[in-house]
Length: 401
Ligand SMILES: Cc1ncc(COP(=O)(O)O)c(C=O)c1O
Image (tube, rainbow, N blue to C red):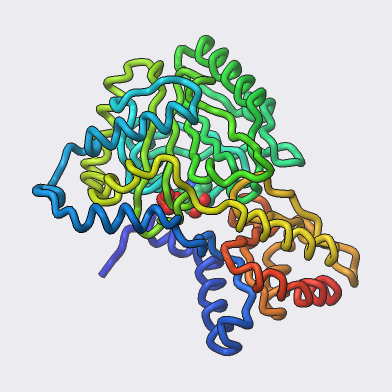
C-alpha cells in the first residue's frame, strides 16, 4: 500500500535515530540490559510522587456518574480554573480558566497551537539546538521552522533572532529549561526578546507570538527560578505538561495557557479549542485532568536528578569531556572531545563518536539530531548506580577515541 511522500521522506530521515534504538536493543540482548549504559531516552524513570497514587485511587473509586463521558473540548471547567491558578503563580499575572485549554501532553499542545496560528508558509523561529520533533510539529500545519544559532553558552542570541524575523514570522518558539542543553533563559533576556518582537510588530503590523514550551519548568537546580513568560509579553502562549514534572509521559496530559493580553483573545482560545477537536484529540484524558487539578503543588523529587547531574558531571570532568552544565531538565549536552590520535574532531564527528561509544556499551544521541553537530546528548533518566558505573567506560572511550 502506498504511503504519503512526506511521511516516506520523514521515515527516511529518522533512520539514524531508529538505527540507534535498534542497535541499543541488540546490545542489551547481547550483554544484558544492566551492562549497557543507555542514556538515549528522555523517559523519566523517577516514579510519580506518592500524592499521584493517592488521588488516582480516590478518583478511580469515586465512580462519579458521567465521569467517562465526552466533555467540552477545552476540558472540564473546574480543571481549567485550577490550572489557571497554577499558571498565575508561575507566570506572574492573573489568569482565569478561560485562558487555559487542556492538552494531550506538550506534544499535543504544540500541535494544537501551530494548527491554530499558522497559515501556509508562515515561519516559526527556533533557537538551536532544539527538541527534534519541532520540525514535524510546525510542518504538520504548513509552517516552516527557521533555525537560529544560540550563543556559545547556549543562551539566546537576540541579534540572530532579530536577523531572522520577517513579515512571515508567526512565532518564536523557545524551550526553557532546554532540551537538550539544560539552559534556563533569564528574565532580562525574555524582556529584551519581548521588546524586539514588539518593535518588529510595529514595523510590519504583525506581532509574532512567543510560544514557550515548558515541560521542564519544575525541574530546575540550585533553586533557579524559571522566569515567567506570560507577564513579559502580551502575545504569548505557554505549553506545559506533566510528562516530566509528575513523570506521567504515558498518560498524555498537559495544558496550554494563553496570555490574557493576547489580541483577539476569544478568537485565539476558540481556535485552540477547535484545533483540539479537529486534530482528533477531542479532549485531553478525563481522569488525568481531574487528577492533575488536585496536584497543582506536587512534583517529582528534583533532588534525585540533581544527584545524578553531580555524578555525571564528575565523570565527564574526569574523562575530559567538555559539557554545558544543565540548569534544569535532565540532559547533559557535551562536546565531542578531540580525537586522541589525529587531534581532529568536533564539528561533524558526533555520529562517529556515538558509534565509538557504542563499542563501550554507552548510548547517547548525536547532537546533529538537535541541529547541533559536534555535540551529544545524554539523558540521566536512569538509576544513579548506572551513571556511576559508566565512569570507566567513558574514560576508556575517550582514551581510545
Ligand atoms: C522540549 C520538549 N517538548 C515537548 C516534549 C513532549 O512532551 P510530552 O510528553 O508532554 O508531549 C518533550 C518530550 O521529551 C520535550 O523534551
